[in-house]
Length: 148
Image (cartoon, rainbow, N blue to C red; front, top):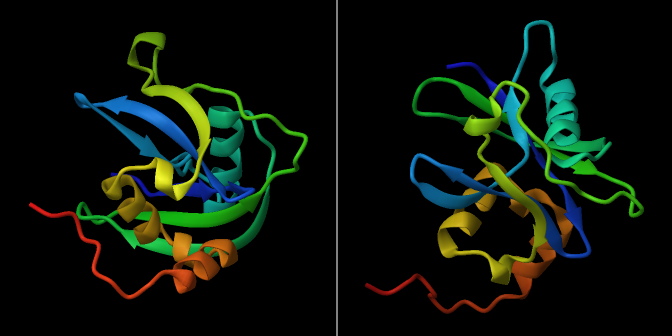
């Protein structure tokens, strides 16, 4: 498995995500993809953001390196995009039209996502984005884990 890079883009309290259908299930994912030969992880994150969401961005900072079970790594970057840009649903150029998995690109606030999707965002480093750090600090100390 090859290494990947992903982008966390935040605008007005919402995170840019892709509604995806893969291996029989729907979920939200961050824009990202495989690092190509001779490409830096930073270049990959910016390229994938353009391909999948139609946005040109600027890296703010690295957020995390996720070590996957298969031994590969995912490099995560906080990326800024200008307010006038509009996200579009792009395509993965490595996949045929029938293989495309990105159904929609959208901006979602945390309360609009499932617990599972939010957990993945935290794992990727969303807590290191100042706006979300501040939000989490405002939460109470009650346990809110989903009940069985």
